[in-house]
Image (cartoon, rainbow, N blue to C red):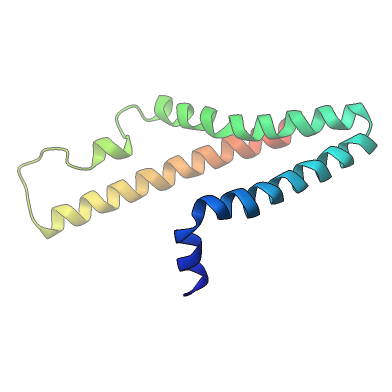
Length: 117
């Protein structure tokens, strides 16, 4: 029996006896580390992850506001009468480019928010 088979069969026990104690030890380590830091550093440690997690949300809405008719889900299966490999290739290219555009916008906004504030 391989390790992965054992984990799949005993996933609840694995979670309870391996993952949760590791998370608890990590949380206790961070709690002890924060105890030695001044309060102003603790507030910054709470503030910065909040900014980094808010950046992609703002970036997503910025992408929707900048390109209201070029959503990745609206590009594919747009209902044109043409069918065939060339049309499917064009849809795949448009879908990929809209996803890359959205990722660039979201990454740029996240980086700007994280560095500026």
